[in-house]
Amino acid sequence: MTFFPKPRKIKAEKYVGGLSRGIQWEYSDDAIKLSANESALGPSPEAIRAFEKNKNNLFRYPDDDSEDLRDKIAQTFNTIYELKGIDRRRIICGAGSDQIFDLICKVFLARGDEVIVTQFGFIMHRIYASLHKAKIRFAKEKNFRASVDEILKKVTQKTKIVFLANPNNPTGTYLSKNEILELRQKLRSNILLVIDDAYAEFMNKDDFSSGLELFKNASNVLITRTFSKIYGLAGLRLGWGYSSKQIIDAMYKVKPPFNINGAALAAGEAAIWDIEWTQKAIKHNTLWTKKIFSVLKECKIKANEPTANFFLMNFDETKINSKNVFNKLGKKRIILREMKQYRISNALRFTIGDKEANERFIKSIKEICK
Ligand SMILES: Cc1ncc(COP(=O)(O)O)c(C=O)c1O
Image (cartoon, rainbow, N blue to C red):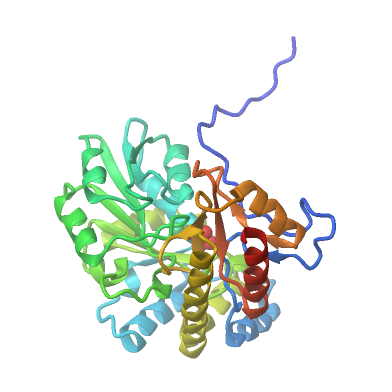
């Protein structure tokens, strides 16, 4: 008998990304991808220039500790956003915020530990927690919105981490500043609260505060940020985490060397510093989320209030169900995200695109749902 090396049994779901062109629809070269919450306008021209300039350095290893990028992040928040006291030593950069989730699970979790996520919380949180052998406990949501009480009900002596994306993807709902503060206050102080701020820049609600604003001085919160959304650099894989020096130092110990490529570092520095471009992206999003929200209402499609750069749309009150809407939009070369992996029935997620994409979506959805 011949034996072969076998990997261990891996008990984690596989992440299914938003569909791209060319997969299902043969005529999809000019398809519009609105399935991955990517940026509508793309990156700042300054970021593209920095990316191109980096071509002269391709033979060099990148800066292992992202020194310049961390300086630029701290400088941007301290001066331009006046979030005083952002300390570069409390920042760690990752290949996407994804890598930050991986690192935090690596330094906190062992078999037998428990991690709390919310019922429809961003899936990568629980994927990493499972890969690091934790048991996942799901806190019920109410009307697709996280609940502080339900999260607290799931706490046991074994709880190590609570993950919360605020606002959350795919639901688009958020907890208010007061609710988040209440959650932190009522959680045992040695449980780490991870607040995923991936879409915080898009938010303009009076009762909302980002994780970074609320917890920049805390020692039991990790905040994650990404360059994939407002900064339009999803393809370069860049994100960062902010926490106590002790936690960040532990993450540095397990971080792979040279985890971020030089092009991403250069583009990231330029992107975060280009405030005008960031403002333009926010303005575009605010305008189109408002417009599209009213179109959805007109079409009897239920959706979350405008928050981030996407809507979770429910088709219970329309004549047509989500599967048929998905296929009909696909035939019109508009690709949305199905919600099977999140087990949300009769729903699709739509990402705000550029003007042309949004107009094409509006025209098509009106035709399909009338
Ligand atoms: C809530 C949330 N967090 C994190 C991410 C991933 O970000 P990154 O591209 O930085 O890994 C996403 C991407 O869709 C997201 O929706």
